[in-house]
Amino acid sequence: MREITVTIDGKPVSVPEGATLLEACQKAGIETPTFCWAENLTPVNVCRICVVEVEGARALAPACSRRAEANMVVHTDSERVRHSRKLVLELLGSSVDMSLAKDFSTLAARYGADPQRLAGASMQQPVKIDNDQFVRDYSKCMLCYKCVEACGTDAQNTFAIAVAGRGFEASISTEHDTPLGDSACVFCGNCVGVCPTGALMFKKEHDLRAAGKWDESKQTVTDTICPYCGVGCTLTLRVQDNDIVRVTSPSDNSVTGGHLCVKGRFGLSFVSHKP
Ligand code: SF4
Ligand code: SF4
Ligand code: FES
Image 1 (spheres, protein in one colour):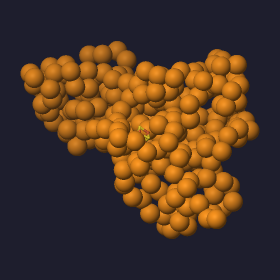
Image 2 (image 1 turned 90 degrees about the horizontal axis):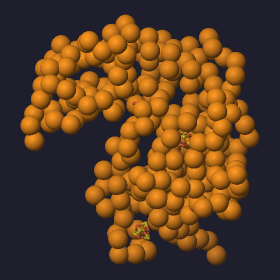
Image 3 (image 1 turned 135 degrees about the vertical axis):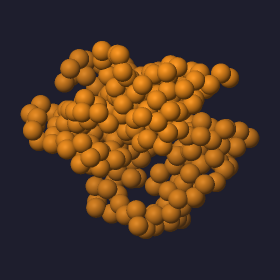
């Protein structure tokens, strides 16, 4: 494939034609924050934490989806970029519980974001617990669309959830907001696997956290192969006190692409069954 060269923060970087600015930044060793992007999902460009400044462009560009073009000159740490990322962090942190979102506090410190400055409207609502597999705490939902994509064409093709409502009323919902068990959901848990904020969480993890017993220092993480069928999916098991508390799959795994079915994701409780 033809290589093109872009200049990022003064450094020339060569990438294959069609690569995104995020990939070019990664190649240049420049860390770029992302929330709504994942390597196993189609970019939807909704969070805007990844924006960069492209010389000659009027608006900031989302690095996760903007294709690199030959001779582009890009700045990832300009005053405009820092100001925009700071505002995104403040808007998210003031309306959504981002306490479990990976890197949120580090990013808030890096960009000097103070969510309290905008405190007012919030997405606060009760946790939805309507099954034994996973809970939905939409007070932590930043509307990144990852779960919708994983439930839709990017993985499961079940389309059990979508965004309903507008503005502060917008939320991820099943059809007519029915409990998951009455919806089209097949409990693959691929939505849980991609959620970046802990809004979707294994029930076991939720219960341990609620009881103040979630303790990562006591947990082990082990890769194994699902015992159920010939597909042979790689499972990553997080175990605490001899109990499997979370099951994921590596997003770069060539068999799963990070996605599983209900059996691999939630069907292993027999392992710790105590008669
Ligand atoms: S529930 Fe999680 S994955 Fe779905 S939109 Fe909200 S934050 Fe994103
Ligand atoms: S996760 Fe599902 S598809 Fe994958 S090996 Fe297990 S049973 Fe088969
Ligand atoms: S990570 Fe690029 S818009 Fe969200």
